[in-house]
Length: 114
Image (tube, rainbow, N blue to C red; front, side, top):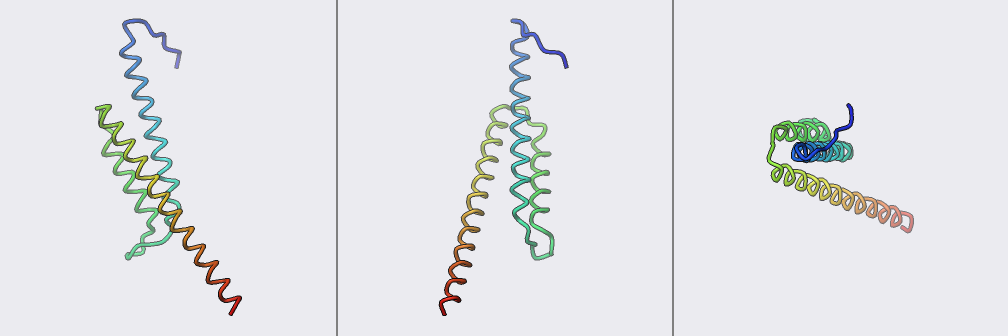
């Protein structure tokens, strides 16, 4: 694609293109982060379906449902909310993982002493 030359008549068009490409990049980045986070959920639900697959499918549904949104404020709100939710899930998962490892180490050291 050839470079775009911005003239006074194309400023608003260029601004729209910049916003949409930025939002698209941010949405793609968020989607990839969600997929990476889903990999950590390797256990299955009651029906035997892996949680990582269920979470990936739900993320895909959410992104597809939001694909046609054009209001920049709503798009920004969805991106910020999505990023915040992913970070909260990652922090809670890491805290639970750390607590599990500490308990394993504690139980292992108690067995060695007894």
